[in-house]
Image (tube, rainbow, N blue to C red; front, side):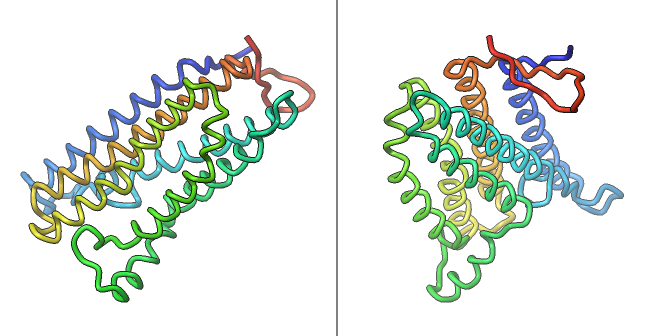
Length: 241
């Protein structure tokens, strides 16, 4: 009967993050030193500065896994002796499902041009989606304060750290890179460093959050492995410690 130890999944995930960032750096060095006039062109598919690339796919998949795990937590806690957090978990599931879709099709990008044109935004706000993004994050944070307070302290800290890392990249370094590009140009070394750090923070933040959710499933609900077995109906079951 095949099983997957949930504690080992983060090792694979962080390994993937390291590989994706390394390939992104290789792509940048390749373009800067050799150029794009080769059969390989600009190696866009492993670049960290494009939407349709390996890093975006990985982020989308991690977000989808987070959505699935949050939904599982919602179901488990709704039928537990302390069901007060199940709606919060379901909200996380819906939110990360949307983020997974957005990562692939760039819904947030449709706000950039209208906001930039309307308010004549430059510098750090050149990528204007950060304005509604920041408002949404602040609103979400206020709504979820009670949820974080109810969690075991270890997971409150882990969730806040992972969220801070992700937002530091998605919003913080996004604004820094925009500001730097506005003064030095999109081909400057500083901008390239900023967007590499930005994507690295996002990948690490998402991976840390997914790892924390897996740990929560094991420590709070008592599930340690996924067990796959043949039966009359195909599927899987979560096996407790």
